Image 1 (cartoon, rainbow, N blue to C red):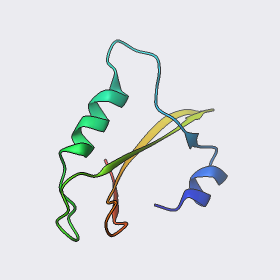
Image 2 (image 1 turned 30 degrees about the horizontal axis):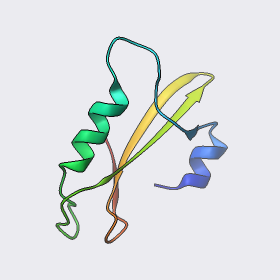
Image 3 (image 1 turned 90 degrees about the vertical axis):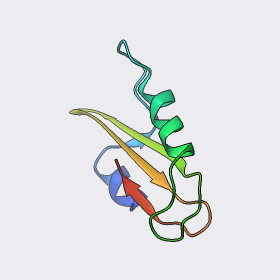
Length: 72
């Protein structure tokens, strides 16, 4: 995950706040229960990004131990 590229593309830290489903809570729970594919650490950090024009949401699981990240 390259945060500079996300910011250049118009994304900012944050999760969707509209809709019938609380995506941020669900995604955060999934990350907390996930294991790192690289080092095996249990418990990934949830890093959400949103863009308003055009509207888009991207979520990443980031390992607090080794820094490995994956978009989901």
